[in-house]
Amino acid sequence: MYRSHTCGELRASHIDTEVTLSGWVQKSRDKGFIVWVDLRDRYGITQLVFDEERTPKAMMEKAQNLGREFVIQVTGTVIERASKNPNIPTGDVEILVSKMDILNESVLPPFTIEDKTDGGEDIRMKYRYLDIRRNPVKNSLIFRHKVTQEVRNYLSNDGFIEVETPYLIKSTPEGARDFVVPSRMNEGEFYALPQSPQTFKQLLMVGGMDKYFQIVKCFRDEDLRADRQPEFTQIDCEMAFVEQEDILNAFEGLTRHLLKEVNGVEINEFPRMLYDDAMRLYGNDKPDIRFGMEFGELNDVAQHKDFGVFNSAELVVGIAVPGGNSYTRKEIDKLIDWVKRPQVGALGMVYSRCNDDGSYKSSVDKFYNQDDLAKWAEKTGAKPGDLVCVLSGDKNKVRAQLSALRMELAERLGLRKPNEFAPLWVLDFPLLEWDEETERYHAMHHPFTSPKPGQLELLATNPGEVKANAYDLVLNGNEIGGGSIRIHDKKTQALMFDYLGFTEEEAKEQFGFLMNAFEYGAPPHGGLAFGLDRLVAILGGQETIRDFIAFPKNNSGRDVMIDAPAPLDNKQLEELSLKLNLKS
Ligand code: ASP
Image: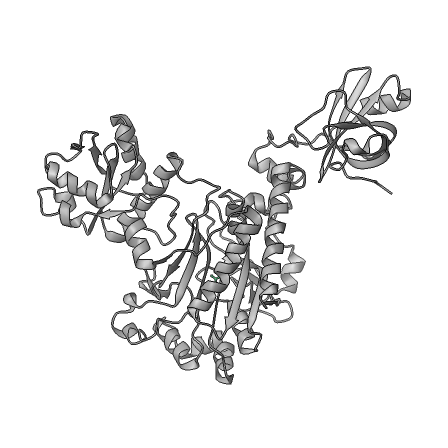
């Protein structure tokens, strides 16, 4: 028996009992005549004590030579600690050790295994198994477990069946590049790893499963922006015989349950916003509504004066920065530099100070009088003491730029409080979006998404205007889930593929299986998927997903611990009938 108790378990009530513990040496303090050792396992830390008077000499020496992260087993008596440590649950007691075995030695770890470590990101990732011993990472993984357990419980109780779908499949078009896997048995042919189980879950609906979910890995070969992973986890769901309202209710219920069970936060009905309004008011399809700073469109009041920059702009739009009138000229100049950074891309920024006496002082006083500036304040909701920041230009670009500024300022003003939760449904997404690169429309969500009733005809005349039965769930400015009501008849699906530029042959070759299935009585159906990694991070009060993933990849898609990806040797290449044609 390696242990009678864990290192997090012993209390004053255990005093005088004999116990056996196993764990890692967190640290030891050697005063010569007395040695204290902190013994750690997943459950906590217990102090061990060895002293000249009570500990045999040989064991005293052994204790003095224990290194950090040695794995040991000790037996001893629980005694009351002379100086108690109120910071840890076991702080009232220590173990007077009578027997000690070193189960395994450890070389000196490359960073300190403590809450605040001296190890940088790279080294921690290389030795992730040591990093996982640290509380912040360990607790994040335990937190993730709790969330997934709650998801499973809730959905199972609600009649959802967890069904596994294959990883070796044919491409699913979710907008990213596929990871592909060569098939040895089918020379020259490749599987694709699923970007999501989309078509399979739809086939499960055709198969009559009615309510499906799966906590599932998805794979997308994208250039990795700061907080993305090439493999990530979805809570993937689908339901038959449902309308949008049924889906929103079902998954609002799940999210409410998680917020309550995991965070102790009760939220009633989630607000809903149309996509068009989200773009107009926040410049963003995933607005953070924990704070205001809504956009005020200023075309009416800022154009047709003598300021050419605004006159030639498609959109002039501003926000009020609470208390922003206190910014010095230098601070405002810095803000202007911030919006001009290539990552944001604005050409400049106009501002108007709202003075406490109700007057205004703007950077464009030459063109605008006090009445004009009062209208800017009114449209942006600015009060005395605020600062109105105004950007102008192409509508889509300027919205994105002002949205970036809004988030940055809110961050600086401490308005994005991690323990405050503001969920929001965003509804009625466009069906299609224009892609500059390929100069054509793509499905904004995916090609299986149905258009709003009665809008199919618009596809031919005004495709950009067609709205979809598609919805996103947003939490604190992050998209945590998204889905749609699907097309469930072959004719509409064929039409959709046609509009998306698939020839009949291409559609048949890639999605013949789905179109065939639609000929055998496909029920109306719809669903959604949550991004589990991000959901867990946000519920955990953080915005970076990496600490909630046991073995994440870095920004170049590498696992630096196992050193993957890696070249194949020639024998493997031959077996797969592959020849490399490397560019460098
Ligand atoms: N498969 C979709 C996605 O990964 C979600 C859905 O439409 O259910 O975004």
